[in-house]
Length: 208
Image 1 (cartoon, rainbow, N blue to C red):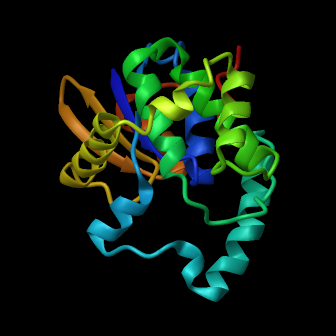
Image 2 (cartoon, one colour):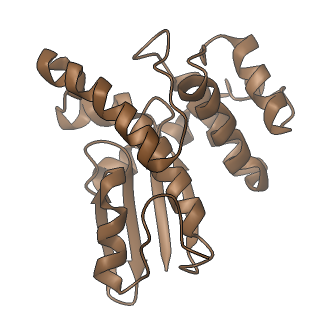
């Protein structure tokens, strides 16, 4: 089963989804493909609004994130700057996905841990270089990702996500013998398992 995960590191739900899918990858024999895209572009193209734009929902989401952090066993710290402009980080991930795909997962995790794990900046060049170094990635990708070709590739991925039906992240596209189906949200991974008769033991991962 192939699963494409469109994500942006600004999204904590994408972080929870990413870690859960990584935990089930071997048990489900999952071909997990990470697709960096720009959530701001998706929201604009679809007319969507950030959940916290509704004040009452914003208060609720703070509490819900704390509960989800415990349930998923993924440490979360609300960032000092939220929302923040992640387009530089997503361009960097786009370049790494293209040139060094074996390092993509480690860099995505490093950026999420920096932003949502420690609540730190992921906009400034020195912050992005620190995330690269923590992931074992050559920090020169920070400068190289400013290339027009990389920018175009990120725009194309964002447009592709919208064209395929995404309106927010995480957007998961599952491809199997029955075709392609989209699932939205970290709370829908269990539904993917249910629909396909896969073992589901909760977001902490399969029981060994």
